[in-house]
Image (cartoon, rainbow, N blue to C red; front, top):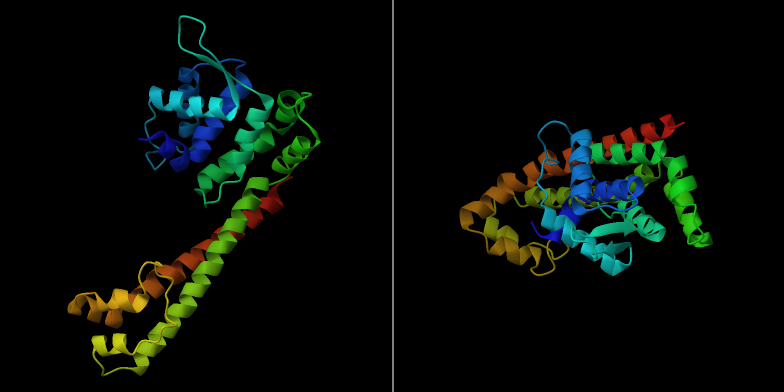
Length: 260
């Protein structure tokens, strides 16, 4: 797995493990980070799941070389053993900031784990880890934001709201398309494609118009889309996924209210 994939595919587990290592050990090696990755993986999901992935020593080394290039860590290669790393306070802040400001919807287990981590170690991290002259006023404000009640959950709720808006738009467009199909019963699928108004974008890729995509489908598959595919996708995916996201948002709202 490429290092980019390691940081992007499992950002919470990897970054939380790196942060935990940096907080608990003044200086550390890649094997220490590997230990915390396995530890956090086991806590987040002890049963086999998407969290069950392998990380190699060389991947961790590449990751921390990247952190070193960013100025987040110091690297000591003077000894005969493996390099030693140590986080700067600003590096730890940048790491945890990147962890709570991911622009994607995260698995619920990772969100709850990370939020509980922030809540549990808030006082220690603020008063010990970030109690340095290198932390300026703006940094201090960022720290206060990150450790405010349910901060990560609230960030995730914003992303969920975007997903809800997107699905509501897709359902609206899908309903319009189904109404168009119903009003053209008796016509062939190809005739319906030829008469399809350009307004039906269906949020397809900008690389190919929706009508062109339909026109390139094999005849039997095109008929299937008009007879079954669009309706099944609308009811079986868009609407069910919308209900799921609304339920998840309510779950997170309840979690925020339950936070002391």
